[in-house]
Amino acid sequence: MKNKKFLPLVILVGVVALLGILLAVLTLHGKAETDTTLPLCDLAADDIDALSYAGNNVEVSLLKGSDGWTRPRCRALWRTTPT
Image (cartoon, rainbow, N blue to C red; front, side, top):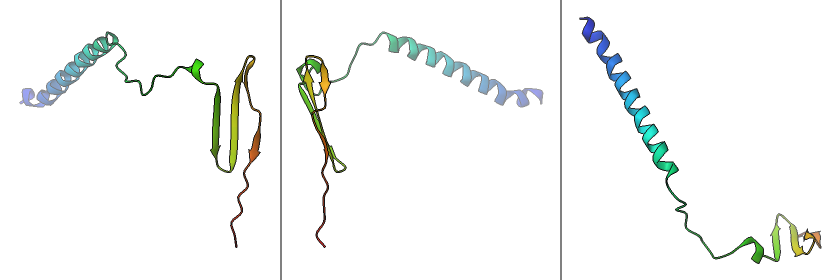
């Protein structure tokens, strides 16, 4: 009768031990992997000279200069809807 009471506990301990071993193996295996991402385009940060964003009624541009990025203009594009 006592053996039947301990059976779920023994199964639970076995499952937890198995999951711990599996986690350790996957963690060690993950460290040996190299970068497997796919580049979407052949672009480097040094290739970019200007950035622009337009949205939410605002247009912003950044220009790259010798002293860093500058924002030459920032103006609101107010839209009026005809009534």
